Length: 150
Image (cartoon, rainbow, N blue to C red; front, side, top):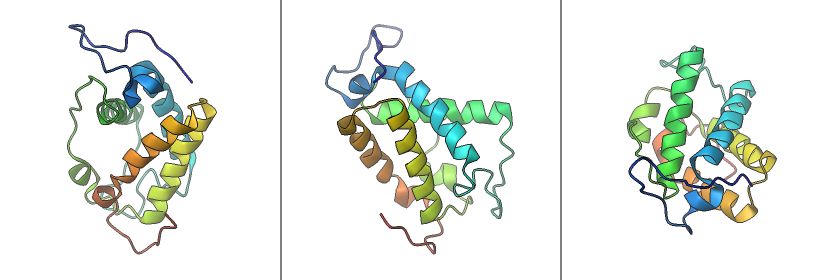
């Protein structure tokens, strides 16, 4: 697991030591996971990262990818008990019109799990983060016509 000391933000506020955020290794470790995860998801045709066939086609310019990564880091930091503020919109609003299917959500979740495994995140922390991600399914999936096995 990646470990980082001083997982706080300016002003000295830190996450509780037993929070998932702290156990993951803080923002630097979460950033490493997000970097690997986004690259993996973008390369996986089952994810449909560019949103082909939806009203929200995404070019994935370097600037857009960096913005996505920043938002994901903020979201994961906050969702795991970290001190970072999530400045993005809610999941339903962000994903509206992307026509994401259950199968695409599952493929992206598999990519996240693979990134966590690659970076040697312990099973307990990996499973806790995956459970958090699972709670976003109903806000992200719009087209449940493609059945999920999860």
